[in-house]
Image (cartoon, rainbow, N blue to C red; front, top):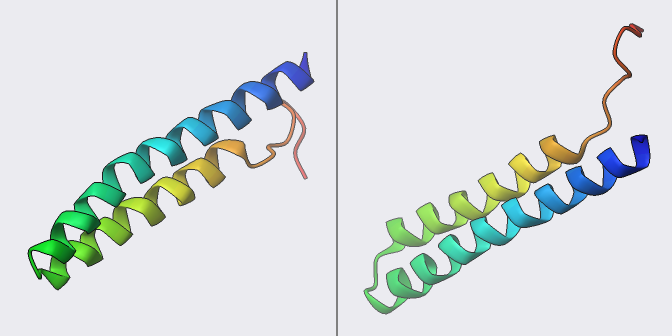
Length: 68
């Protein structure tokens, strides 16, 4: 059961990263073409946010009821 949960978390993390890239890359390309450096920063923040959110999703958590 735990392996199934890990697989689903990994897949969800991958999907979140893919969505962040799918949004961030076109925004960055458009901002570069339009010569807007602020747009590139926003695109980078979108992609970094996707990676951070995916890392938070897939990080291992302690089992329910077990405290360190």
